[in-house]
Every structure is written in structure tokens, then in C-alpha cells.
Image 1 (cartoon, one colour):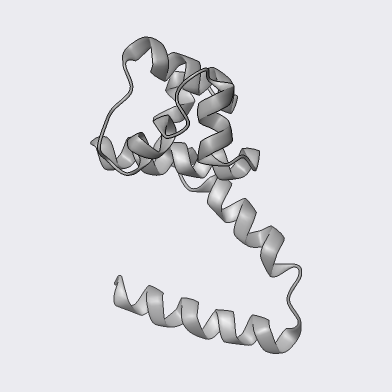
Image 2 (spheres, helix red, strand yellow):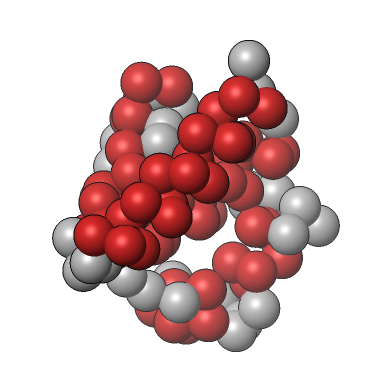
Length: 105
């Protein structure tokens, strides 16, 4: 695990909660760019701040680092957005996903 994992995981869970970096920073009692500085990779949270972040995002530290849960919030967000598309747009998305999947084989 590295700082990128932490940054990406905070972003995923924040999106699931549907809150901006700015609002999350303020809700945690930090300056308005606090979360952005973490998700950009410039800083890592102190342990007590990390525990506050987990609490805010509704996960335990163990759940935060669970690889099996890692992409679930983003997948849920994608599913919500896919439900809003018509058939033509869905076919376009499937084409893009097939191209991306082939690239990662």
C-alpha cells in the first residue's frame, strides 16, 4: 500500500458519500484544502486524522484497507449513472470499456 492507494480510497468513499473535498475538509474541522492535499498525494493524514476520516466516511480502518471493497463505491456510482443512459449511449460505453479492458490484459 502506498499514498496513492490512500488518496484513491478516500476519493472513492467520498464520492459514495456524495460530498466534495471542500465540504469534507470543513466537516472534519480542517482547512478547506485539507482533503485535496491528501488526494493529490501532497500529504498523508496523521493517524488520529485518519481515524476521523474513516469515521466520517462510515468505514472501519480494516474496511478502508480491504482490497475486495476497494472499487465498490466507484462501481456503484458508475451503475447509478449507467441506469440513466439510453441504449445508444450504453453501447458507446460498452465499446469504451471493451477497449480499456483489452489494454489492461
